[in-house]
Amino acid sequence: PTYPQLYVNGELVGGCDIVLEMASDGSLKETVAGAVAKSKEALHARLKALINKAPATVFIKGSRDEPRCGFSRRVVAALAETGADFETFDILEDEEVRQGLKEYSDWPTYPQLYVKGELVGGC
Image 1 (cartoon, rainbow, N blue to C red):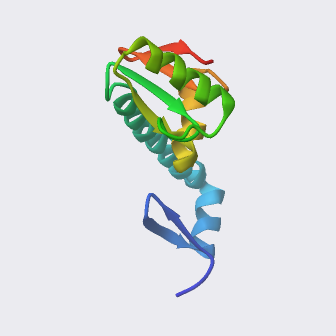
Image 2 (image 1 turned 180 degrees about the horizontal axis):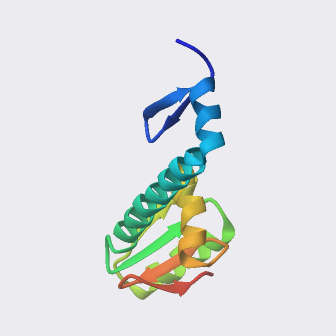
């Protein structure tokens, strides 16, 4: 019943006294670092699944029918002209994917085109 309360991965760790005790014995850092690592692993697994959802997937701002930036529009148009089958993912709808994919791919901008799970590049 005390506040503040620390939650890690949806589980209550404790209130102020517990958090301070964990900080002094070093276990707070381990607990938080472990949670961050698990979260990152889960995000990478999700990104890999999205990337491999189709033979060609492009992560854009907007949708295939309504790209919301010029670069996304140009990439969608170029892919459509080839007649290739491709999927799109709107990064504006999912901030976790938007930020996580930049780190995962080591490519800082969008759009990002993946073919057979491999990053081809941007616009």
